[in-house]
Image 1 (cartoon, rainbow, N blue to C red):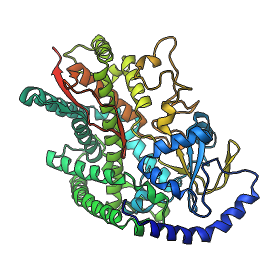
Image 2: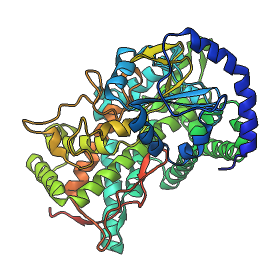
Image 3: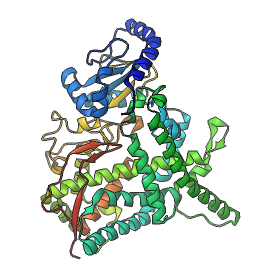
Image 4: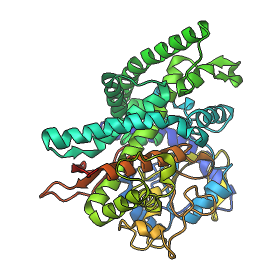
Length: 510
């Protein structure tokens, strides 16, 4: 890391000294205490654990959960973070007290650069958030419109299959599974955003820029611990993020301008607009009522487009890679899935969206992937605007509240043999009932839960099922001889494979 410990120490002393008296006085007035946690240094809190926290957050938190229970407090100076690994406490917070936990923290420095106050994920509760979320769900994510994207899915499937077949026929080299599927998802999401098939060069340029941005977010959670001083302490990272934003805009703004001009021309010539309503056209029409009815500027539109690309590409491609890794390690599961698909559609028939509803084993495979390998092991942090009591503990105003998605899906108290990939756990008479939305109870929450649940749950699941079914129906997936599949994890924007999956594919007989 690039920070100076002396600067951090002095900065924390200064900022914490100003707030510590008020904080302690307020705490003494309440009958409830903060959730337990390791011993704190006066004023500095848990700064002695900061290095471990930054290097391997999950490993440190597992130790703390084992010692202190399923809800713990981590404090740096005046910044308080609460971590929750309990299914029941997550349900109590996000469902039973959903209104109180519906807020996002104020934007930290990297978020400010990318205007995240204008995204569904990043903006706090309010009219703007509801307005943007309603538009996104009504244009792109509403189930009644899924079939209208069918042509785009078929095109992207052909792009993916051509790529896989090329590896098999021309080079014989193993396929970089994550890279190929990620590119396919960028093709699809860019079509949903702009309503047209973009050139391969532009798609790759956008993919490269967005991937670079996400890679830089790794480890930048520390900005939330130093919301005011992070810009100065991590000056190099700050400038790198500024440069990435400039590069992002240089790629997206020309596309936005071209789309705006094309739409203007269509209206001037009284032409019928394409029956496919792209996300960007809906953004052109938006008026921010709370800001005098003004239209979105192009930089804000770029931010909203970027949000869709990031949320839909990396998460889905990461999950696809993990599921394929398990199907390669467990060939019996792959063949059982192939048999189910063959029983619904022949090898020469197109797999349609309605066919997926007749494939319970496919759905179980995807569910098991989401349980064991949720793309992110933390949901985006929540906060509360007033003190609230959860399970007898004080959750103070403005505390960061984090939910341990990865831990919940692997809890041996809830899941038998939690580290084994067993789709059958969701099937048969002894199946484990799961409400993926968490409304009734939370056993796993890969899409979060409550009012901030990922609005892309339905479309993301459809894409996963559609492309997985076609991948297994059209190709047999095998490991590289002499190399075991490495299931080790590394946390970036999503939880990726330490050793990226490479696989040999062989076309199935028609």
